[in-house]
Amino acid sequence: MIILASASPRRRELLEQIGCKFEVITSNADEITDAGLEPHQLVVQNAHLKAAAVAAEHPEYPVLGSDTVVSLDGHIYGKPRDKEHAREMLKTFSGRTHQVITGIVLAWKGKFWQAWETTEVVFSPLSADQIDAYIATGEPADKAGAYAIQGRAAVFVDGIRGSYSNVVGLPLHCLDGLARKAGIDLYDNGEGSSS
Image 1 (cartoon, helix red, strand yellow):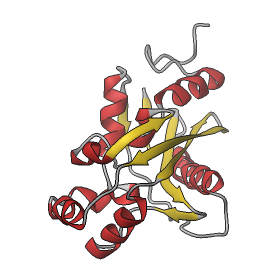
Image 2 (cartoon, rainbow, N blue to C red; image 1 turned 120 degrees about the horizontal axis):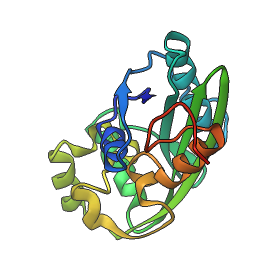
Image 3 (cartoon, helix red, strand yellow; image 1 turned 30 degrees about the vertical axis):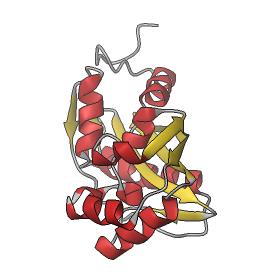
């Protein structure tokens, strides 16, 4: 078993998809929002803060911390503050390519393993009516970049280059590789890898 240090329902769904047994214990760590860091540095640092906080309370299990942001033109976009902020984000992404970056950290037995994944997402041009209708669904509220690729915003996406699960919130291929390095078998959920 591992501990997921995240309240994200999307991350839970992704771990369930691959058959990983886990428990959710939400981290109380304060996330860094703007420290002059590059996007990959920011998400890894936040993932580390989350994993470390939960691992300190539960050292007997591997802990997974994760954080996702969207980046475009040197700006980092997290979750929208409100509907107007979501509208601004979606207008910015309209007809353009942006990057979704997720940092993951595994904490176990006093050690930390970290990685990040970047996926390019191409948005079609969006009309004001499309954006307003999407915002009215409430779906953008708790999503980095104010959209859910696995939800209604799927119709906005012209294409992606990289990991789809990364855009949803947890790069599964990257996680598998990191878990193998750490000696954690996500599928048998034993005390170590059999390889």
